[in-house]
Image (tube, rainbow, N blue to C red; front, side, top):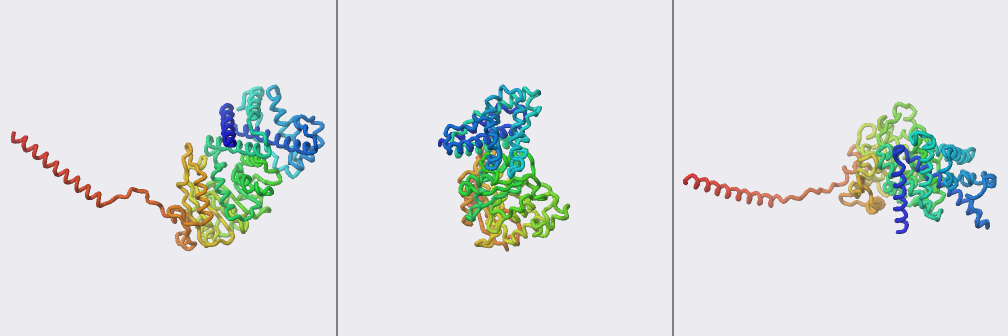
Length: 520
């Protein structure tokens, strides 16, 4: 209960910060300043806690890195970078900058130099790629923040102070890490819900992320690496950090993202969840054309929510048909819809004993042409394990009912596809639908046991699917419950005859009245 109350208070504080500070720039753009400041505070406190614990273990119980002189701290830079991946001088720590920010007439220059120094501390080291450009979206000279430097500095100082005042708990190694990560996720949810597609397209709701993580780990196979080829802000990958990652601190996280802003958000998210730089590899680029993680394949788990029905090079690039990711079906996904190109890329990257869970646009389940050919190849080779129809209106900026395709390469107890109709598994949550824990458990238990449940799930043979034009729509296989009112025809006829009789009697009475009036 205490944790729940702390979380609610944290969310209220974040909302108040955003509500007070928005207006200078749009909400989705302003998140760069709120999240950037939150990240700056996190790495400052993370580094301070790390150095302090080393000194306390050595017997210097009163040591506080934040109070140390820069000259004394500088010689330890190389050692700290080797262990933490970055370095911050004591004077550059968030807490110390915050103390003097309102009086610093050159706050924009101060922060710019600090951010350059943090990124620069990793240059020439294994963590260089993880820190390069992390503060690019924290534009301290943005004219939308104010017409002059003084006004912009005043607003930035306000952000620093508000983030500094956030109560994130005292135990950094547990509660504060969870609080920082939760603050990030709440901010992303809040901004995405207000930003529509411009923000929501690369943020997967936490309950959907939870379902995907559970699906890929359901059979208990060892998961040493998790991959997302369209990782967005990293919400899918990080569900593993809260479950499998706690039991396996050496778990590796791999992701690729085409949007530079979102790429930065993902890396920030990794740090805010206290995943060390040597345990994640997030790359920038177009996964379909230039995949960055082929040398790290195969992966034990793949979770992804790729962009829906976007165009790609496809047949315009003669090299792609010979790419081992796409060559199996003998055709490429249509140039206008890359959905199944992502699916084939994911299948290729999956280990023999691994599981992939992919959120897909529903059209890939039934569209004809090249997509039908690809589906047929997937079904014939027994790669399709399960299809789950999700409720509509779960995602920000997307009102349609999406689906989950679960892929496996390894042997299964049957040569069938499990279809689950979870379209009614939700509650209303404001103007969105939401999967409750009960909804999630229902989906997961049926998936794990591969059991049939009337109106909810069924197992269908590969032959029957192929006879049905390789159609994978859940509604084609799961019987739909008839919720229409049952009408008793005999009772209706009897009632109708009674009404007719009453009508005839009434007509006779009217005729009698008219006759009597005429005689008078």
